[in-house]
Image (tube, rainbow, N blue to C red; front, top):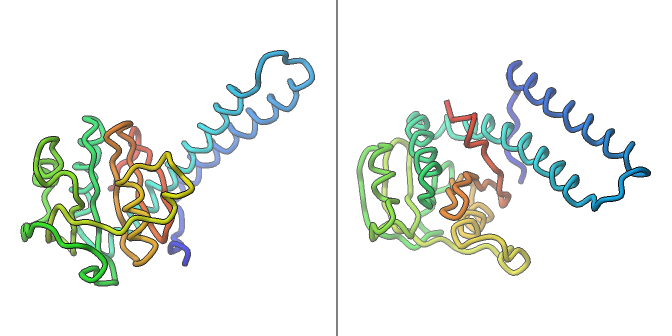
Length: 209
């Protein structure tokens, strides 16, 4: 199942067009220089790869808002929390329940039963907190529980670069329609899993509005 489709705003389209034009120019220059360059081209290809990741993360940031807004009106609080944790390299795993009830898919942890709040989310995932290793479950505008255990994806067998949080996020999204936010404690990068695919978010310039 593919993620839902939403119409891009004019400003996002213009941003993506600029990025695509930059990629096109870089690719053309690289192709033109193939007969004259003597150095290893791996660095050039790495820069091209980074440009593609940047443009994907811009689009992902926009679509994330569309995916979340029908299921929680407190998505700006999620934005504040994940960006603060990203800046501090605090790892996090946050499940947003959508249409599918997740009770049978996760191993329930510690009940929280509190209104969704950015400060509370940051406190839960603060390093050293006993709850920070598991996943937080959000239902609507409510934090249901923390330290939940999720099913790991089979992708772990083929992609050794993915950490446990990312494999757990993908694993739950493979089995349900849940959206799972991940903050990497190694890199600070933010991503979300939906329908078995992991999407990067531009943590520097784009926040969930």
